[in-house]
Every structure is written in C-alpha cells, then in structure tokens.
Length: 298
Ligand SMILES: Nc1nc2c(ncn2[C@@H]2O[C@H](COP(=O)(O)OP(=O)(O)OP(=O)(O)O)[C@@H](O)[C@H]2O)c(=O)[nH]1
Image (cartoon, helix red, strand yellow):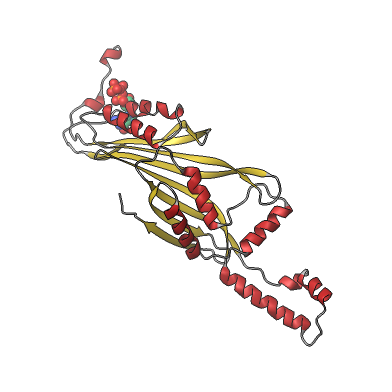
C-alpha cells in the first residue's frame, strides 16, 4: 500500500448524521510572540462540524494553520487570519472557527523604593472566534494582589487604644515615653489580617483594535487595586508595602467596584466580567465579589 491509497476515515459518510458545535484539538504546544517576547503557550483550535454527513474534520489542517502564530506578534488581525484559514480548509464542513491561546505573560516590575526589579507572571488566555461571519476576541487574565481587611484594621485600632489606656491611665504624658511605647510590641498589640487575593478578568475588545492591550489592561487594573504583589523586596520596599496596605484597606466589594470603574475607562474594552477572590486568612473559605458590564453570554 502506498501513500495514495491511505484510507481517509474522516471523509466517510455516516449512518447517524449529526452536526457538532465544536471539534478540534486542545493543548497544542507552540511558542507565541507577545509584548516583544517569545512565550511558551498552548492552543485550543476547533471548528464547528455543520455538515452532519461528514464523519470528521481534518485535524492536521487546523494544526498547520497555527504555523503563522510563531512568526508574527499576536494581534486581533493575526487571530482573524488563522481562523479564516481554518474555515477555508474546511469548506463545505464548517461555518464557525475557534482558537484559544493560553500563556503566561512575563512583566518586569520595579520595587517600591529600592532600585531593584523582578519578573511577574500573569496567566493569560486569548479567545478568538469567527462565528456567523462575526469576529470576536476575549481576554482572560488573573492578577495577584494584597488586600487588608478594613474591619480587622478598625478592631485592631480599638485594641491599641485600650492598651494605651491601660499603660498610660492617670499619668502625665511625656513625648519620649509615648514615642518609645509606639515603637514597642505594646504599641501594636493587634494587627489586621491581610490576604493574597486574585482578580480574574474576562474582557471583550472593540472590533477595530489593531493590538491586544494586555499590558495596558494589567497596568490599569493593578493601579486601581493599589497593592499588587511585589517581586524583589528589600526592607525599605517591605515598609513601603506595609504603608500602602495601611492606606488601602479593602473588602472584596471595594476591589470589584474599583476594577469596574478602571476597566470601563480602559481603552479598547467593550465589556467585562470581574471576579475577585480574597483568600481569607481569617477563614478557611474565600470572600468573593463579581461585577459585569456589557456582558451577555456569547
Ligand atoms: N477527525 C479526527 N481525526 C483524528 C482524531 N483523532 C486522531 N485523528 C487523526 O488526525 C489525523 C489527521 O487528519 P486529517 O487532517 O484528515 O489528515 P489527512 O487526511 O492526511 O489530511 P488531508 O489530506 O488534508 O485531509 C488523521 O490521521 C486522524 O486519524 C479524531 O478524533 N477525529
């Protein structure tokens, strides 16, 4: 048997004809170009199988359609061309095409005070689809940040006041003594709890965009949250972080509202869904808030 006689099972007719919404491959390893870097990624590539008589799609054609992704920077235009190539290679079989890229964006972040910096990794998914001849792109990303509980801060302040009353009741106050007390463990008998928190963002983009505004959106969201987790940290940076947290007390509701306002102003964003998760150190469960804008199920 030579190559010309290889059996083509995908082309076989079916007894039970039925169209399928999505057929393809998930977890294809490939490099992508983003933010001037070549990043390891995985792709989920698929098409609808609208011709219910056909046994299968042609997986290899989708796989080969991904080749341009390692040569050009990821952009809405590039994703659209790849999706178009999926449909061209499945003429008569498929009307809709789908492509999701999963990667970790690496951004270099400066320390708060010292002249140091370090890398932060942001899990990102870029979901593109060409459905009913309409092209859509959605971005998904996760941002870690620190949140300090405002209720816990108020309760701690009250305990510090009580300790002050206990230690200084019926005494003349001397500046030196009070200063020394403030620097002692008694001066901070209680501390509010903070938690590492995560903002999960799902965003739809305006169709006219030439670029994927991933870095701009991450920067806008981190600025709104105020206390993004740090990379390289010396004591001076840790002190600045402690001050930033003290000035930035927030419940999960506060974080969700801040992100809502910031993302509405972020250029290129046409709708979003936000979910913030405060992995509480007070509880074994999480505090969670969600917010949506121009977000109907696609
Ligand atoms: N459709 C389909 N193909 C599968 C599946 N699992 C593995 N494959 C294989 O994917 C390989 C590539 O399929 P095709 O793209 O149709 O390959 P081909 O017939 O050589 O390529 P064309 O000539 O372009 O059609 C085949 O060897 C299939 O057996 C599956 O679940 N569905």
